[in-house]
Amino acid sequence: MNRDRVLRVVHQYLVENNYGVAALALEEDVQFDKDSTMPSGELLRLLDEHAELTANRKVEATEDLSQLEQKGDGRYCNTLALELSKVHAGSIVSVDACGPDAVVTGAADKTIRLTKVEHLVDGFPALAISDSGDSSHSSGGSHHSAMMSASAPVLSVRCHPVHPHIVASSDMAGGVTVSNSAKSGETLFQAHNHKKYVVHVRWSPGGRFLASACYDHTVCVWDTAVTDNGQTFTAKLIHTLSFKGAVESIAFRPSNAAGAGAKADGDGCGKQEMEAGAVLVVAVREDNRLHFVSLPDGAQSDLNMNMLGDDFVSFSALHVSYSPCGRFVLASSDRDRLLLFSTESRKLVRTFYGASSDIYSQPKHCWHPSGLYIYATNQDNSILVWEVASQRVVERLTGHTGTVRDLILAGSDVLISCSFDKTVRIWKDVPVA
Image 1 (cartoon, rainbow, N blue to C red):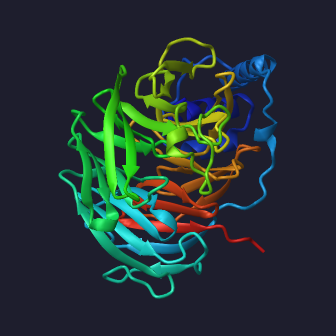
Image 2: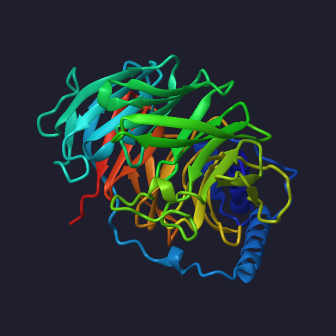
């Protein structure tokens, strides 16, 4: 429902129930067109319809959703710990944690930068702001090092989950590149299978598979191998998957998910040789279905995001991720809400409101490792934090002055964000007295 209609419905309810002062205050505060053709009692009708749909959904639910009802423990990233400024000359589009003491960023200035951050995961002092010319800071301990050049503006960067010095990136020219950040960005692999913007690159949990998502309606998947103590990288293209619209987002199921086909090693990543059975979820613009791809065979299935099971496209999923347990998939939509689906029943189980988004936005989100909280970007440049159980926004992280373009978790209590304001912000979980 668009904002104008919301305002019209609320205004009608106020007028029909003799809340004249409140109706006049709304008219003075916000400009909107009144709709004299709208049936009377529209708000009550919508609430009744929602109650009926929700009741039907609860009756149909046969799986155990108690995991989603676990109350939050109050431990989530809530405090700015470090700001990295002047990392790039252009807007920063993507960010990832590169091991326990570095951050990798990709930007519109056609560069990828590796920034050393001492004690990134094991805890550095909060509220250390770095704004000097070289972005170094004594207490925060940040220092820029390797720079890798790209042939076009960089849209996505992700570090290998087992060998974090190996960095995959994608760009606006349709390229996918794998570089060795430990050797000044030495190119290990490069592919030009795509014809338009490659908006996402993602590694499977153990690093065996590398996938890319493109606006040319395709997803490419490579079967990769890392040898010689992480110095040699090889990749073989095994799938080029076609969809009916621009591919906006992809995500691999976590290695600890039941039946994921990979056992966890000491770092929580599935060992590469055990990754037969990986699953990739794909979100496509102007498509009411999420698509699931099993690897390595490429078998596909889908999930209809419409509650009534019809094929009408009323919204698009612009970003997707799996919950830490792998049982649920979260989708950021272009209609002011995030939707949570069960991968077992293929049903909608939660809806999160509070963030603004439209067809022109590029929303991003990520999970707290506990599964109790969700972080998501908002069009006012803030980051919202929801408690999953109550579906309430419990925190709003502010400070970025441009669109927040990426979010990533490092460890259990570090949130990293990057923005068109050319900064990277690192947020920590600081207990509130």
